[in-house]
Amino acid sequence: MTIGLSEHELIRRNSLSELIKLGINPFPPEMFPVNITAAEIKKFIQEKQENFKDVTIAGRIMSRRIMGAASFVEIQDMTGRIQLYIKRDDISPGEDKTLYNTVFKKLLDIGDIIGVSGFVFITHMGEITIHVNSFKLLCKSLRPLPIVKETETAVFDAFTDPELRYRQRYLDLIVNPQIREVFAKRTLLIDSMRSYLNTKGYIEVETPVLQPLYGGATARPFKTYHNALDSTLYLRIANELYLKRLIVGGYDGVYEFSKDFRNEGMDRFHNPEFTQMELYVAFKDYEWMMDLVEEMVEKIAIDLHGTTMVQVGEKMIDFKRPWKRFTMYEAISHFTGIEIEGKSEEELVTVARQLGVPLDKTMAKGKIIDQIFGEKCEPNLIQPTLITDYPIEMSPLAKKHRNKVGLVERFEAICNGKELCNAFSELNDPIDQRERFEAQLELGKRGDDESMILDEDFLRALEFGMPPTAGLGIGIDRLTMIMTNSVSIQDVIFFPQMRPEKRIT
Image 1 (cartoon, rainbow, N blue to C red):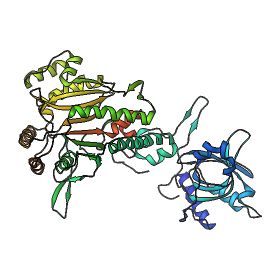
Image 2 (image 1 turned 45 degrees about the vertical axis):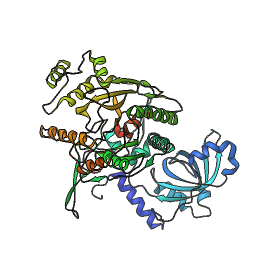
Image 3 (image 1 turned 90 degrees about the vertical axis):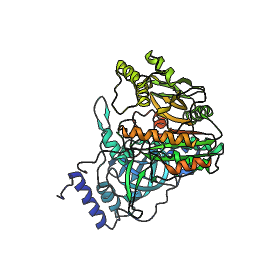
């Protein structure tokens, strides 16, 4: 036996060798002329049966019942499954029955990919079926698919372990094809958002993923090195500072669907690589951006579901405008009964301890408030809610509040207990911005490894003048989780980050 191969894998390798001996290429190079899908046949069979007398389709064998000189096979293409009826004398005319008796019956397996031609009919049992006139092996599968196990009371899918599903997404897509609907809706969500922004005349752009300085968010970066430049580079944690440079350059509205990278822990809401849409619009403010977010997300819900009502677990979430609004201080007061406005850092530490909120010594005033909000308020915000007016210490890139000392013009949209988006009236005063960056450097000295660094080129850009601007970052993965009723971010990313395998099997 070949080392490392199971008995089933060895049988398939032997079948591969036998096919080659018969002069059949198990991996043929030429194209196969597919002219229809399983879904199209099922959708139009009643009204267009006359048009289905010569169909050519390809798919993976998912089941088969061999009954002597005739067999039934079920294949699966990207759109679903359909039954085939294969008769020995049709695919092996004449005296030589090798194609049916040897190739089809003995050397093909569940998982193999075949192409067939024939005509469509409906069986006496009402099953839509293709009567096959010819078939061709397109790819030999060398590993067996997980088998669905049946008992008297239930059917068990053999591939439900989440780690295996995320690690071997290709196999997950084969044996659990219903998950394709999640990714189809993700694509529709992005298309809906893009069309909404394009209709408003905003320009989609691309900005660097590799950056000499990381910025635009408070997060730890991934670090790399460029040999030719002999310099350290970082995978971007956000694209905010580059998009603002474009506003300085004269664009009135720019957006980007960006892959961002943050060197942080992983859980069902966090993946080190994630997707954001960031938008910046000149001559607007955060109040205007609140209305845009409500309008855009309401449209997305309707485009995906035909309604503003979306089922998430046992909850029904309604994205119909207007959404509820709290200031951050109002939310903390509402959910804890404690007024924190005007309290010093020492007093906030006492409040946090009173509420049982965990802290660490690196946390300054802003992070303490954020920690209280995250622990005591955020989990209670199930329906979409806008939280506004954050402490200045939490928001080094946001403009100071026009009426409230110590706060900035910032909001987050919270839904199902998690942040969906973050938005500001953008800080465009270069002197104030420098002071904020310098305050972040001081936090870094206290041990805050998520504090921002000072970007001299960005400050130089602001010194040339950036118009009043509203900015938005919205998490595509988080929004997709809600819109598809998915419990984990790994369910809405094709290939989420995983711990290295100890052994590849």
